[in-house]
Image 1 (cartoon, protein in one colour):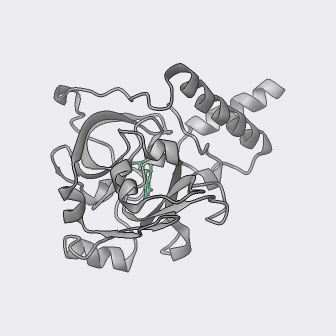
Image 2: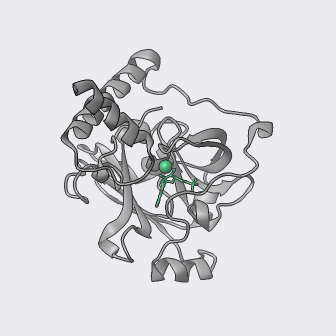
Image 3: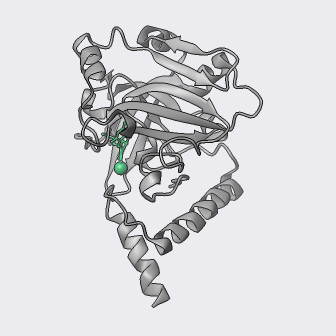
Amino acid sequence: MHRRKLLGGATLLLGGCDRLAENDTVQRVLASAEGLTRRVQRLLGGEHTLAPEYAEADVSPVFKANGTLNPDDDDYQDMAAKHFSGWRLEVTGLVERPLRLSLDDLRAMPPRTQITRHDCVEGWSCIGKWKGAVLGDVLRQAEPRAGARYVVFRCADPMENGDPDSKYYESIGLDEAFHPQTILAYDMNGAPLPVAHGAPLRVRVERQLGYKMAKYLMRIEVADSFAHIGSGNGGYWEDQGYAWYAGI
Ligand SMILES: Nc1nc2c(c(=O)[nH]1)N[C@H]1C(S)=C(S)[C@@H](COP(=O)(O)O)O[C@H]1N2
Ligand SMILES: [Mo]
């Protein structure tokens, strides 16, 4: 009986980015598995193991777009109509120097290009080529203050009928934020990021699952806790029951 409950939880997890039922067993399994993957990854490879990178020939001919494909938000639509010339990435919270960066500012920073595999919790994968600014470089400019533990990504897309309080968000630890492959991508497969994939800027966190990779990025908040955001679990999908540390 116990075993069947566990398998039920695992099947739900693989079932996709659908809402998970508020189920105690699922919550417990996710919580324990999450700590385990994180510890095992650290034991096996240390903090900064690189995710595998691929060759140009491996790039998927079609990269599936998932989740929000075009944000239902007037401000976002206005910015998109002006080719994101008015868009700025804000860096706020526990930092010495809050930042407001244009796409040109980000493109002027030393770029990193990587060809990696994107794994969605739904069970599909695609290989894509990403180019962007290294998040660690942006954070070093902003200078996180003592007590900073998390980097919270705030996105433009409401998840419930245009409700501004339901906008997608995500968070990662400061260690993951300073990982060399954690980038803010403005190009995909050699062209500016399409709207369906998160224009004008999306996060790549290559050692974790797709839902960590926030699209339509508007603001980065450096914080000591995410308990005050959403339902307090560190991300839109985490609030529906997914693991915060989504290691692959
Ligand atoms: N802002 C935002 N970011 C998001 C999502 C979303 O709906 N909104 N979906 C997530 C999920 S579940 C996946 S698999 C990837 C999909 O990225 P893609 O559209 O480039 O495939 O984006 C992630 N980031
Ligand atoms: Mo996903």
